Structure formats: structure tokens, C-alpha cells
Length: 163
Image (tube, rainbow, N blue to C red; front, side, top):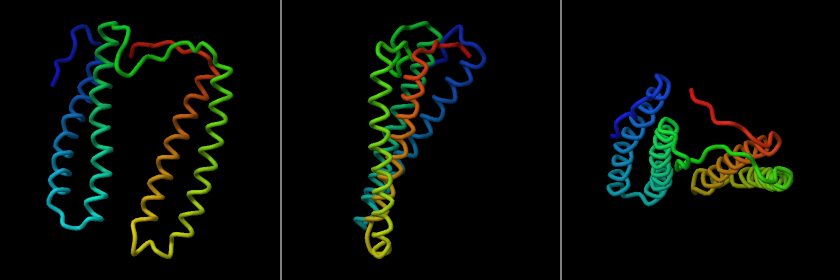
């Protein structure tokens, strides 16, 4: 665990320590999931645990990057791993493209919901409906990301503020 950077405000110290402690707790959870995946005999359960492990690995990485970004804010570093929000060079084009991708993702969500209805008949005998449901959750995540980008493109810029 990295020491809290000197000069941190109370908020910065609190959020830095929260990110680090949660990231450390995720390490143990990840080890436990790996143990389960290696010991379970059922291929379907192992497949699902491996899906969770992919997410847990990404979460662990993000917590490290978030702690790094907080440290970079405190130490006034210009380029943290999770970058600062900066002025956009061409917000109009970005907004137009983002709207197109939002439409694609919304259509994708609609199709996935239709597939889920069709897959109800095999929901108790296959993982297919669950996998489609997970893809729908990813699609909803993509929509959330694109909505953030859309708001950024509409506003053009934002400034970093210290907590």
C-alpha cells in the first residue's frame, strides 16, 4: 500500500485511502474467486466465475489508477493514468459521432431484449439468456459512457477542481 502523499487535504487523504483499501480488499476476493474457479468441477460455473474474474481484474486495475490519479492531483502531476478532463478540440464532431454511437447502442439493447424473450424457453438448461443479459448490462454501461461523452461535447470543457 502506498503512503498518502504529503500535502493532501482531508478529502484527498480520505478518498485516496478508500481507493487503496478497497483495491487491497479486491485482491483477496480475486484470490478467492481464482481458488473457486480452479476447484469447481462444473464447466458452467467455472465459465461464470472466469467472467467475474475478468471484471475483478479490471476493477483492481482501476482502483490502482484512481489512487494514482488522486496522488497526481495532490502532487500536481500533468498526466495521471486516468486522465484529467481537458478542453475538446472539436466538440461538434465528437457530439455528432457520439449521438450516432448512442443510437447504435440503444438499437443493440433493443435487439438484446428481444433475444432474451426468445431465450426464455432454454433459460433453465443453458447459459445463453444469462450471457445475453450480461451483454445487455455491458450495452447499458456503454450508453452511460457515451452519455458522459455527450455531456462533455455539449459543454466543451471543464476544469479540474480540488476537493
